[in-house]
Image (tube, rainbow, N blue to C red; front, top):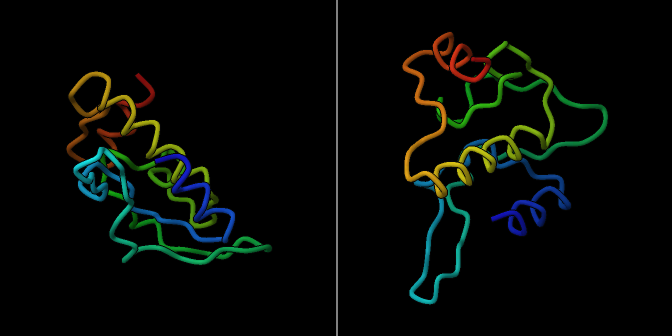
Length: 107
């Protein structure tokens, strides 16, 4: 997963919607990242983006707080949430709204 996203980031592409449902596993255990529907190219200066990205449970705190200028860190946050879910077999932060999600993250 990290190698796939590093590949994207090195080519200046943000996925912006990493979640378990967007990871495909083949019969040999290989993982492919799918659904680049929210993916965007990025550069310097940092562009303004919508904050309505990433499924709520995998959304970085800065997006929940309303930033419209974000970086690769949003994908890295999502990867961390996915890794925690793989280890525990349940989502790390299961908020039912943006504010509930923030409370769960900062608890």
